[in-house]
Image (cartoon, rainbow, N blue to C red; front, side):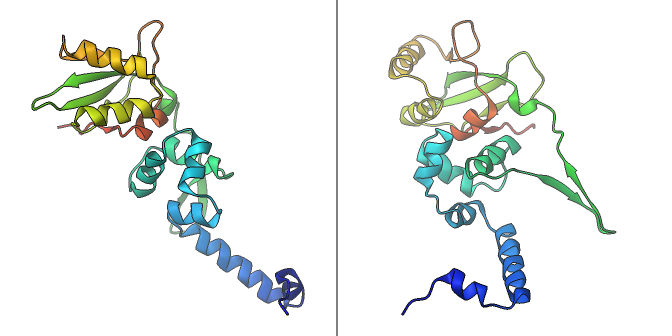
Length: 198
């Protein structure tokens, strides 16, 4: 006859229960994002719905080794957690770092540029603030559409942008009155990365 885990745990030595809990905590601390999501019994589709992004964005976030803190914070918050950054020193002691400025909340305007060989690139520039530029890799039009859908642009806007690109090399899709500006988490979910300074 199968026995309830809680019944078995109630009969365990309290020291063993405490040791098991500590091992679980340590194991959770070593998990990659996809393992942590699985441990929370969430699928990529669940996370995409919680973060209101395409499922492909979740896959991209989980595979990245370098990301914005705001992206990681939103991911952890969607699972019900709180992101904390700690500085741990060799002589002992740790300090929680919680001031990163409001860079991540600053708005960006986005332009689509026509490149060579039927390629396009989306670029994000800071809108009335200091900050680094972001861009996508050069992509075919289908990649532009995918990125703009991740930015929640309507089909009619995407069509208008495509039509405008037939007449000019660059079209702005955010930043002017009546148009949308974009935040870092949206841009990262759409495949934007920091532009390397040469």
